[in-house]
Each structure stands twice: as C-alpha cells, then as structure tokens.
Picture (tube, chains in turn red, blue):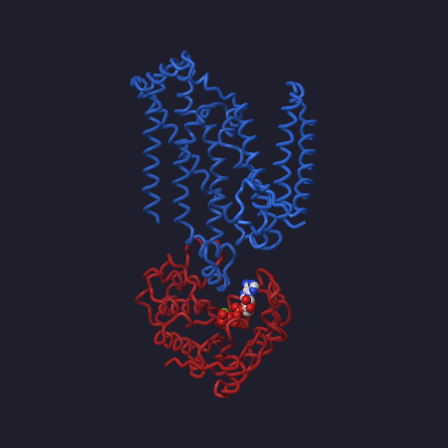
Length: 255
Length: 342
Ligand SMILES: Nc1ncnc2c1ncn2[C@@H]1O[C@H](COP(=O)(O)OP(=O)(O)OP(=O)(O)O)[C@@H](O)[C@H]1O
Ligand SMILES: [Mg+2]
C-alpha cells in the first residue's frame, strides 16, 4: 500500500528552547490507524501539530501525499490543512453556535472569507453536515447549542466537523482523555468506523494501552521527543512497556 | 544594569533631586523671572538627579536600603529586616521627608488659606448661590429637557460611530492575533497612536473640534467619538487577548483563513463583553457630554455655562437637577443591562 505520510528527521525546538522532537522518522500507509503513545511531555501533541502545521517544524521533512509540506508558508499551509482534519482533547467547538453550524465550519477552507462570514453555506453543505451528524449518531441534536452537549457528544460533533473537510488524514490529539470509560469507547468506535468505512487514515495520541491494543493497527512510542518503538500493538511486551513509560510503571486497564 | 536596578536608581534620583531643588528654592528665593528660565531650571533638576543617583549608588554600595530598593528590588533578592521600625531606617526617613516636603510645597502652591474659606463676604456669595440652586427656576425646564436630549443623542451617536472603528482596531491591537514581524509593527504603531489619543482628554478634543467645525453639538460628538474609539479599542483588545485558544486552534485546523478564524472562533467569545463595555461607554459619554458642553460642545453643558456666566443661580439649579436625574437614570440602566448580559 502507498504511503500517505512520511516524516523524516523532524525536529522541533520551541522559542523558549525546549526541544520537543528529536530526529523523528516514521511512515504512515493509507488506511492505517496509527496510535502515538508516550509519557506526558514526550512530544505527542507537538508531533501532531507539526503535521498540520499549527506549529512550525524546526527541521526535517513532512511528506504528505508526495509533497514536502514542512517548508510551506501562509496560503499554502491553509490549503494543506483542508485535507487534514483534527480533533482535540477539549473538543474545541464554538460554544455559542449550534451543532450544525459547528459542523458547517469544517467547510470554511473551501469558502471565500466574505461568503462564510455572511453565513452563506450552501444547501448541499448543510445536507452533507446532517449526513455526518447521522454518521456519528447525533443528527437529532443538530439545532442545539454545542455547549449544551455532553463531552462525548461534543467530541462526536468535532469528528463530524473534521469529516466535513473531506480529509484524507485525521489527527486526533487525546480524543478521549477527558471522557469517562464508557463514552470513551463510543467515541473510539466512531473513529474506527470513520477509519474503516470512509477509508480515512488516522493518527491518534492515546494514553491507555488497552485502547491502543483494541483500536490501533500500528503504534509508535515517543520518549523525550524520540521514537523509541515502532510496531504492532501486540508486540508491546512488558519489557517495552517499562522502556517507554519508565521503570516501575504499571499498566492501567480501562474496560 | 538590570531593569530593577535602573528603576531603583531612577526613583531615588528623582526623590533626592526633588529635595535638592526645594532646598535650593528655599535658600536662594528666586524671583519670577528666574522661575521662568525653563532650560536652566531643567538642567538644575537633572543635575539634582545625577547627584541623587550617585547618593543612591553610594547607599547601595554601603548595603543601606533606600526607598527605591524597597519598592523595586524583587522579593527574593530583598531581605527586609522586619524587626526594624521604619524610623530607624534610611528608606523610612527618605520617604517621610519626601512626603512631608511635597505636602508643604503643595500647600504653598495652591495658595491654601483658611482665611479665604472663612471670609464673610465670600461665604455670603456662596450662600446666595446655594439658595438659588436649591430653589430652582422651573421656567427653564423645557429648554433644559430639550438640551439634555441633544446631549444624550450626541453621546449615543459618538458611541455608535466609535463601535465599528474600535471593533476593527481591537483585533489589530491584540497581541495574540498580531503574531509575526509585520503584524507586530502594526500592533506597536496602533497601540502608541491609541495611547496618545486616549491621554488627550475629551475636553481638549472638544476645544480642538469646536475650532475646526464650529461650536455646537457636532464638535462635542466628534470629541467624544475620538475618545471613545481609543478607550473602547483598548478595552476590546484586552478582551480579545483573554479569549481561549481552543476554538481558535479548532477553526484554524479546518484550513480557515485568518479572517474566518477571527469571525468564527474569536468573535463569539467576545460579543457579550463588547456589548457590556459599549453600554457602559454610552453612560460615560452622557456624563462627559455635559462637561464638554462647557467648552462649546453643545447640549446641556453649553446651556449651563451660559446661565452660570450671568450668575443666574436659580436657572443653574434647574439644569443641575435635570443632569443629575439623567445621569442617575443612565447609570442605573447601564448597570441593569450589564448585569443581564453576564
Ligand atoms: N507552546 C509551547 N511552547 C513551549 N514549549 C512547549 C509548548 N508546547 C509544548 N511544549 C513543551 O514541549 C514538550 C512536549 O510537549 P507536548 O505537549 O508535545 O507533550 P505531550 O506528549 O503531548 O504531553 P501530554 O500527554 O501532557 O499532552 C514539553 O516539554 C512541553 O513543555
Ligand atoms: Mg498533549
């Protein structure tokens, strides 16, 4: 299968001098569900944010669909972002807008600024937005304000918003870290559905190994900004676990 | 030199220089002409500052605390001897003497005089004024009402016209929006212009505009508008600087333009505080508009100054009552609206 993303020699040093990523190399094939694990502060969020260029990488190449997007600037970054969806730990919806309007915001990249500011989303886009809400199972909440939904529901709206972009790649930064275990599985199941039914490649940061084993097709582990493990979730033995999370770490299970 | 050291020395220098200059004036008793020699006197003051800086540095070298030390040296470097009472410290005496001298100079400068306050002629004049004010002449009420309506609308228009300008400026003056080198230059430039604009009182703007467009409500409105733009832009931009980053990232990640990001992620977070600030500004503008009328800005203020000039205190009393009622009403209404917006 062909590669959708190749990261080569990626380095990120923040303006305050923190070197969050050190010579990171990995590839992602089309249709994969890649999970990134690692301790807090190991650079997982930084990695995802470099991929869609919310952060500027310091050095290295990020080859998305055959094009190196690391050196792109301004308008070009924006065009690339249209093809890459992202969901966040805290959902990052617009609280005062309705669910439908939040989902429609996924199409902003295709609209001119003026058109979108006057709220002129096409009927076609509205139909599509409702379809995606259907897909994540909350079409009935379309006209409710986003801040009146539960966390799990908000994350599903966020998934629908990302799908609205027609992305080829979906980045998920700890998508279930602020949800309870049951809701956590619902959201993960929808991500899996998006991955399998729509064929969208997913890169997700996760904390719980039990989730990783259940959903990931492949895993990379970061430690202090370096890739220390790359392989299938089944191959993460206790020994690897200790190496990634440090001596004496114990695995926590979430059912 | 670290920045707190610089602040410490500057503060001490100014305090010591003040004492030095006052001592000089008391000793040499300069005449009017000598007091007006701005260039030479500034040099004397600057010389005093240099001397003061030297004294401050000397104290620092001897390890004695000065007032500048107490104020500006960061806590973790500054071991205050808590057990020593202030009158046994240099900095305590430095502050006490400086305050005392300042107070003495202020009394001399304002021609403070108990005798004037208790002068029987003056006191009777004031009594006549009060008698007039507390016995208003209601015949001028219709004119006063018409004039205060003019004032209210003047304040309203000034606020309304200021909103769109301040709205746009608020984003250009917000640090979190204006990232990048070009943006930073625009940000710094606009901030400076607005700070200068705001530091010129509305009253002064009214004087400028009453010469420009002639005395009347239009001049007053323009003055209030300029001042409102500067004040609102500052308050608005502070609001923009505190919005949460999450929604901004969320919208940016969809490939939205900068303008779309501001409109969809920032604006929903700030509309309510914006409305609240704006209502409050209108309230302030009504109050300011009455004052601005005094220098030819039209409305009730102009009417007030005319009757005051003719010493028609009963008419002035009526006008004051009208102003007080309207200001009180505006104040209550704006507080009520702002409470509802929370
Ligand atoms: N905006 C920033 N400016 C400066 N340093 C940052 C910034 N964001 C992250 N860092 C630093 O970079 C390192 C990696 O942070 P990152 O957020 O990528 O870790 P993470 O693996 O996502 O952790 P977590 O699991 O807590 O989310 C940390 O040391 C962090 O302090
Ligand atoms: Mg993170």
